[in-house]
Length: 249
Image (cartoon, rainbow, N blue to C red):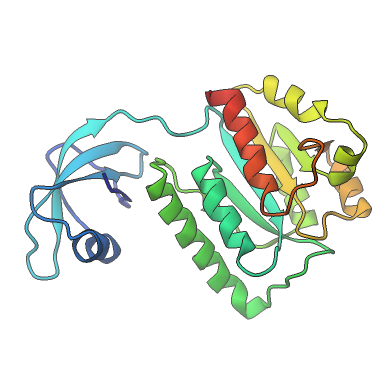
């Protein structure tokens, strides 16, 4: 059953007007008909079963029938991913798959070894594109929360906001090469529901030793994702899968 996010609080029996994007997807893409059902997620992250009504011109509405119990979020306060700027569409792929795997916030990071650079005039457009991808992935994976796509940040800006997090990790390939693989497993084992977790990943060029040192001085802990060196776009998904295994399976 199709799921859509509604930018308001819903109540049972309410008639809700569907916005243009939702209307287009239901009636033009999915060929929806009056009486069919969709799931609507409101601003309180509540899921409702809604019945489609007949369109009146360009106006499409649905009636909220009942609330649906559905748990699809990590049992943590926050799961934030910060990534260097990978080339081409890899960052979009990371946002899409990380959303499917449970990420709640995303920070694109400007790092020294990034292959890509975002010109100032393109930053806003790229942010909007990533937010749209996150919303579509959240709908597809039956999330009740759309991840927040934050503004492009420098390492210094990320460090300044990291005090809000209780768990701060760095995926660092040199830790993997050294053969020390226990840190991530131990950290995940001791997670609590109140924890706010932030994980930093480099782009294709990885993090420089200087960047790692800055993060470590701010309380970040280096960890390995196992004995194999993963691609920049694979590492965040691998990490979220390990987190899901520990907390949900």
